[in-house]
Image 1 (cartoon, helix red, strand yellow):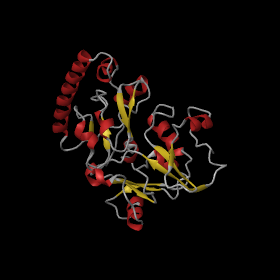
Image 2 (cartoon, rainbow, N blue to C red; image 1 turned 30 degrees about the vertical axis):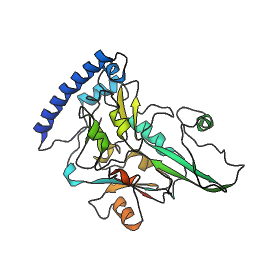
Image 3 (cartoon, rainbow, N blue to C red; image 1 turned 135 degrees about the vertical axis):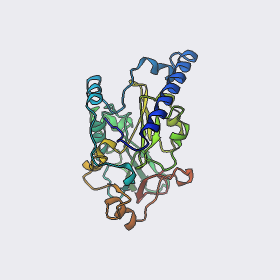
Image 4 (cartoon, rainbow, N blue to C red; image 1 turned 90 degrees about the vertical axis):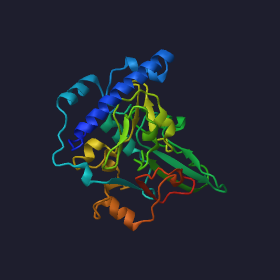
Length: 295
């Protein structure tokens, strides 16, 4: 379970959370009355759970014995991620590792991170884009717990093809936070945007507001889910699971306050860009080698 470390504003934060909890319950009750069976109303019958907890027993244990994060101060860090698309081979190990680490539903349509395949056929200027959710790729994987791209282009002439890993951009100005009516979605001082699913009412305003398609709705829990850079890992000095398993070094993670961190070196030594800069969200995921059609 991801927990926030003790901080100087703890009393203020607790007061805010108490208020938001009251507000969230009020909004949820209104939703249940106005639209029985709606997304908001349905959350009333779902017990409050953290989105990264797999079952009731695991959740109860995490509440009883929360992990300790000694010597961690979120004021001392500014986390960021780099993505070198020139290195990505589309193996989707990152997606599998993320699901296992964060107890994400083991099907192709629920994910915190994903990979897009861009293919330019000879004589065309427009990319054909597919992901693990494509029916042909699902059939090719042969299992709900494995994800593979098929080889549909083996008999055609391809001018150019590449893979682009995607995930939550942990924006400096996150539109998801702006629209959340209960404060369930919030940005922490060291960079990531987190979800406190205790207060998530399932309205999905944040899903609609995110310009990157990085949020999804967990039907079984009635709450929204997204990548949090494995916050429970990075606060202990570990890499996110997707970074840990990448066999080609496509994903680079680190602290921008440290000039010698992997991500600082990556940003300094490469021409990088962010996705959809015109939206004004100021993402903290920096891409190298992306094509003009990657959005």
